[in-house]
Image (cartoon, rainbow, N blue to C red; front, side):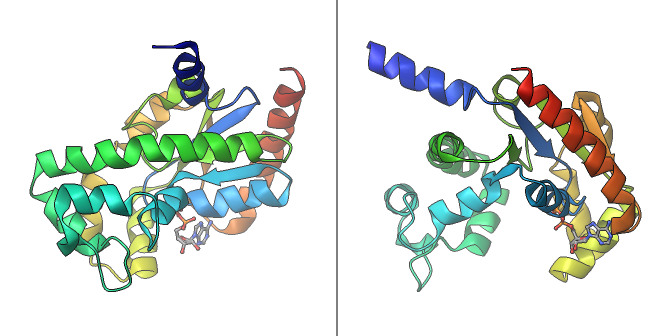
Length: 217
Ligand code: ADP
């Protein structure tokens, strides 16, 4: 490996030298809601799910490698990856899941690192739905923030938001880390079991902490 590659690897591994928080939580726990509240207060939010969507949208960087690996049957009429078809395919085929991830993960990592380099804001928040389950996020961020939510409330929110049945939501939840696993990995926890008003003081308190920590780096 030459010096340039080594520098690049190093850059991707740490993502940023700035103070950064990895925000995670189960589906429907309230990650987006919470991230928006930090953004309103001046944090720079980088959403890895949105990056993954851009990569697989029409003209996205991942489309060509997906076509060469899986064929054009997985591309819809607009030129984007057919997400429903791909989801069904990788659900029943573990090797296809690994092959898709080996295309997407390095691209997501590179895009996330460049977004972090360009980001302005008081500090960085990376929204990573599968932070506990995948990759080396623990080494790439200074703190892990978990949005925690009662499972019944989580179920209700996702059934309503995505028009899914209870068993469909439970099937998605079964592929994610458990509530306990997430809480064990957390440096900070936001409880999102009731209305938006209960979030406000928790956000204010952590925002003050993150600003103080970012100043002390
Ligand atoms: P995630 O990004 O973790 O999937 P969202 O932030 O999209 O979760 O929240 C899931 C759904 O629940 C959304 O429709 C959102 O508007 C709603 N929601 C989130 N937090 C609250 C809350 N405290 N009170 C009421 N609805 C909420």
